[in-house]
Image 1 (cartoon, one colour):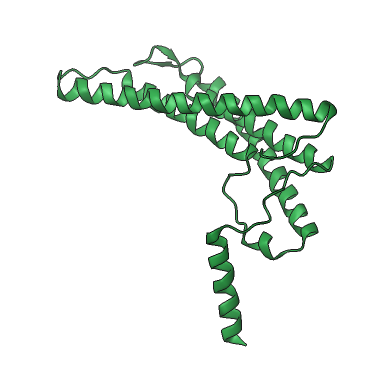
Image 2 (image 1 turned 180 degrees about the vertical axis):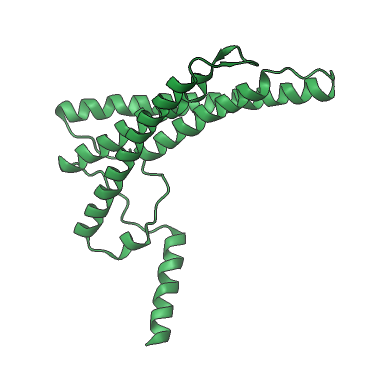
Length: 194
């Protein structure tokens, strides 16, 4: 989050979660690079050596799962996740704060669901072995669990900071160029009807 952090315990927790977020982002970036190298190796082996290794495709998919879920969690912390923000630009400040709080609560519930159901899937597939990698099938669902833990932590952080009065939504009052176009189009349509 690009904001002034509170002092005391909340500030310390926010700084720790900032480091966790940076680590998740760097890990996701490294995973993307590693996945790209694995796919390049697979293409080289398939078309040049005519002998494609069996582990590259499932390994690349597993890495992709990790960097997607880690990146999504960082997006939650940085408030860069998907959202329908047009309504927020026309509401008074108090209404914006309520809607953002509702959004964070829904994201928290979604993250908890990711952890809960991801763990259930991992437990169901733990006895299966992925033949090409020789590891438990549960590894396919660990990215869902890991991402869910981070999504939950980061959403909870936003909720607690907002309730403590920290400027969590600072800088979000400015409409993006895309939102400005939508707002002007809606205004023009309203004027045309009047």
